[in-house]
Each structure stands twice: as structure tokens, then as C-alpha cells.
Length: 77
Picture 1 (cartoon, rainbow, N blue to C red):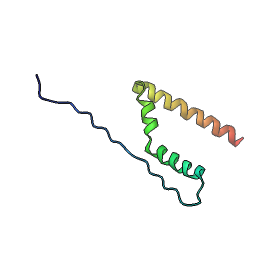
Picture 2 (picture 1 turned 180 degrees about the vertical axis):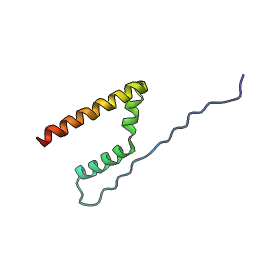
Picture 3 (picture 1 turned 45 degrees about the vertical axis):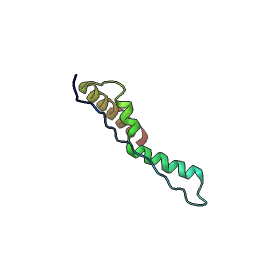
Picture 4 (picture 1 turned 90 degrees about the vertical axis):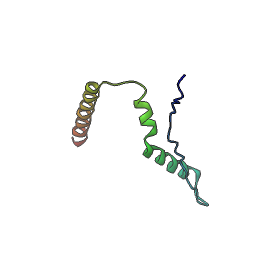
């Protein structure tokens, strides 16, 4: 039997949002959501849900860029 133990270390981050006296809860929730979005945890989680081949990823980026360009041109008209 091996004495080696495998550990999986994960980094846990705690988001702390201070609410000033008289500040609305809506404003505090916006701050908290903004901090959460900056950590990009949810995006990373969604990306790791399934494997995307590199060629497929590049193809999706090109399609998104074309779409954005079309929307930009449509907006200018």
C-alpha cells in the first residue's frame, strides 16, 4: 500500500462587501455582483462544463467577431 496521499487544494475566495450606513441594499448587491463578475469564477466554471476543441474555439471566436461587426455596421446606418 502506498503512503502517498493525493490532495486537491482549492483556493477559496470570500467576497466582502461593506455597506455604509444609509446605503441601499440594491447598491450593495450591485457592488457584490460586480466583484463576483471580476473574479470570473462563473465563466471559468461554465467553460469547464464540457471540452471544446481548439479549432472549434477559434471558429466560434471568428463567428462572434463577424456578428459583432455586422451589428456595428447596422447600428451606424
